[in-house]
Image 1: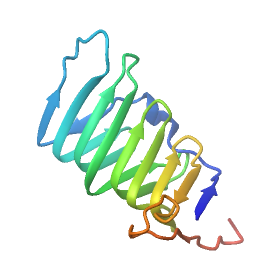
Image 2 (image 1 turned 180 degrees about the vertical axis):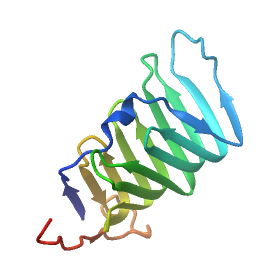
Image 3 (image 1 turned 30 degrees about the vertical axis):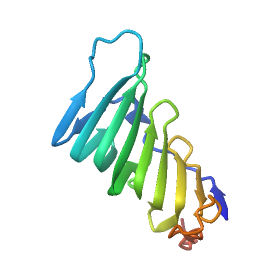
Length: 167
């Protein structure tokens, strides 16, 4: 089973214009003066990637940067965590999974295996979650739908809290 959901607010707009910062125990960075291809950098050990209010924590991050400066990061860990402030609200979107893939060109993050996404008190869980940071559109897929019958997330689980009538 999959679920498509559209939310009304969007992720912090100013984040995409801020620099990306990476911290790690170790790093391997390709030549910064390359002219013809994608640069690949590998960060291992307690990796923290931040860009504005967005924060990704992982055991390992592989960062690819194209010639236009767009970045794609693959984060791997014993639960990668993701957090970003929602635009105009004092609220965060948070996510966890075994692997996360972030694309700065599309402002999209994908969570794989034991994926969980939380906004306020609402929460979704599944084998795979695709989350668009601009529109807050997300898609949740179970391991069964992805063809992994032995996967731990055979069904999608959703918790939506009732809204107060005064809101």
